[in-house]
Image 1 (spheres, rainbow, N blue to C red):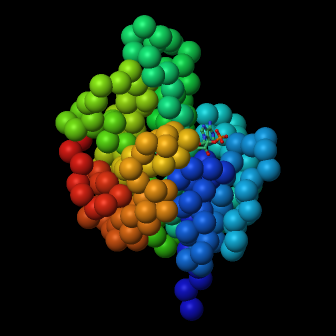
Image 2 (cartoon, helix red, strand yellow):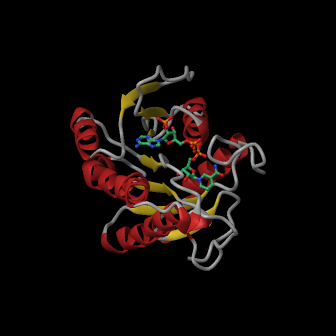
Length: 224
Ligand SMILES: NC(=O)c1ccc[n+]([C@@H]2O[C@H](COP(=O)([O-])OP(=O)(O)OC[C@H]3O[C@@H](n4cnc5c(N)ncnc54)[C@H](OP(=O)(O)O)[C@@H]3O)[C@@H](O)[C@H]2O)c1
């Protein structure tokens, strides 16, 4: 009999990451739910173990990979991200820009580097990078001042395509919609439950042919 799938989710203590953890656990998966703390993680029913992980800190990533070295990971969901400064050129700062790229772009790359052995032991071998339409040059231009965030997600997109080109795992760039979370705000259109259901459907349907693709939670393709 096949064992349950193991799903590792970064930034799982709130927002979309928490909803993904809830849904995968409810579906019978083993969930390695990551939070950078320091607060107590929220209760999630099912086979969920909380792990300490700051995706902006390489030591934290390699420590977790070492602690979990006996694990096979079927699905890695690089979900953790920060919005960064939103004030356009007036408030653009080196520190904020690089901090945003560190978490949103370098973090997922370092996660893949550290967890490639765990993924290769898994059956699904999927890396789902939660990107954003905001990082699409073709579709992502809106009237706001989010230089750091948009650049970080555009860079995550090319990282996803490059990883798919270079390595034999399945790499997806996924847009979750405009989601009602702290980041999306109260005006957002998509409840986290609906977004997570759609993302899970995209991940469930993924195979080698979808590696290196960019899709929205609703299944529509997004141009790079
Ligand atoms: N909401 C939207 O409308 C929307 C639209 C497009 C794309 N997205 C993407 O969807 C994903 C989830 O967003 P969300 O709306 O759920 O955002 P959110 O509500 O702001 O939650 C962000 C999560 O990332 C974690 N995080 C941030 N920096 C971290 C770090 N250095 N190490 C570990 N965890 C860290 C946060 O942990 P703490 O609690 O410790 O801060 C939190 O758990 C992100 O990749 C985001 O870019 C969201």
